[in-house]
Image: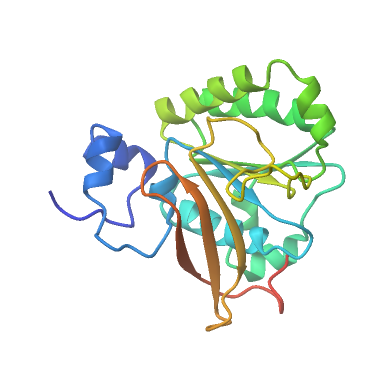
Length: 229
């Protein structure tokens, strides 16, 4: 099977590879990148605190989606809107990036259901950094909601990315656990600056149902000093 190209749209990816197993077999051995086609049909959690460079990575991911002719959308709360000029300097085309400000995580999940069901978006990013663990624990339907969203991602060739805070410290907390306590998360990672090359980001993959934990690199093009966005 031919290696996986990195310039396919999400729909072209599904047309080229009939199953996710076919897609996995096409990946290059020892691949040290994590591109948008790698996230198609998956629920991704990017964990981090205030100094995390998650938005810098998400901006680069969004540029890939836009370059492929697909559409990305970001869902924020009233407390977590990014600075648009920083996104523009990172290469994001702002007039092709709709951003919704919603009151809470439950509203974000409902909006994501409608958006992904339309089939019009290749990437849906939910900034849940303002969410509280208490709010998630009180939601009996969280797994059901995430299950529906995951099914829509697989049906419409989209990626769903959650930005979440670091989980509260517990004595039994496992290193690869995140804020979203669900087995539906297919990929969980943290993002930091690469100490060996400041022009790159270091992606520490804590959980990957397809390839297992790894340390990957992501190029940084443009963006403000510090890339904290």
